[in-house]
Image 1 (cartoon, rainbow, N blue to C red):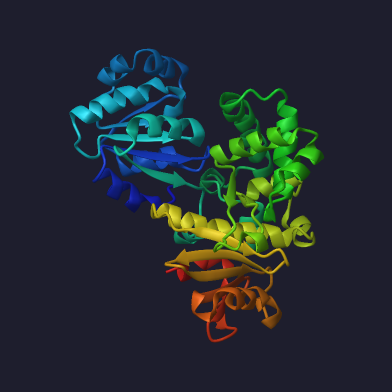
Image 2 (cartoon, helix red, strand yellow):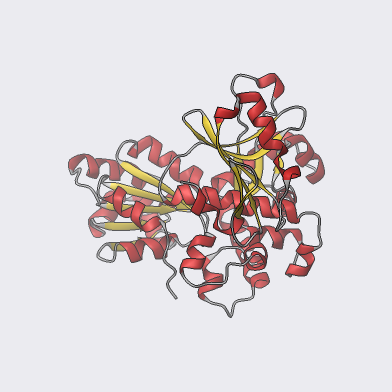
Length: 390
């Protein structure tokens, strides 16, 4: 079953402008399927195969003679030497659309891009299925499904798969392949516990010291491991907004897991009933809606400034989308009928920056349709939040 992805247009647009396009994202989000579907006439080689990776790393010139452009190179981070040879070929022939490169370890991948392909390639970060993509494919995208099953395409393309078994296998592969390759973790068991501790903290302000204490590691180790999770696109860090008022604002980022299904698995939930009656449901809903916004802009290859806002006094808005110094602001509430008590963050934001700073306010909730709460603030369905972003 093919599920159409919103990234196709941006991929084609970048390939028409740059000699190379880099598509990065976590394992199993659908990168390989997307590029092969979008560029069916390109050659294809995967460096997941050790023999191919060894040739590309030790003799990149021969590798590119045997695999000529136009070419898709999958998991290119396994052959860092290949970037330098690609630079030479691109400088000799700058025609657009020659190479499509994918990778699931963003740190290693982008290191090679910045050192060798800066200015020669377009870059897109890919995430798993958005609810918009799921609904467009006629898939079940209700609250229960997206919060317990998540958005990895294979779980929807193959309905016979059991999510619990799939996520267990995914986690083992991630720990063994990506974590071991990015850094030398002394104990994968400790890293597994660290990942589960991050899942419990999704939607919360990140405290390295608290995280390190609970897992039993040093704070510097916690910072290093957070960078690993971020580099492999398992977490998303949302930075705080401030306008030169640092003394009054919280400066730590908020941590969000990128996939709700994996998050629920790491938390130990096996079905919707367990999640629905647990206090963590609000954080899972916030994570889900924030990631829908991230996916919306990422699929269009747009670098739109996203922030959260919180003062030292606890006044907060979950998500700010900045446009020329003004904001579209979103609050996430796991309710079907938000009311005036859910609007305190908007009022605090307007009080600090002025009413003109707020372009529009939304409460992303479980309502089936949209309805006004005030003149400039509406309640909207969280599962279709991307419909309201423009």
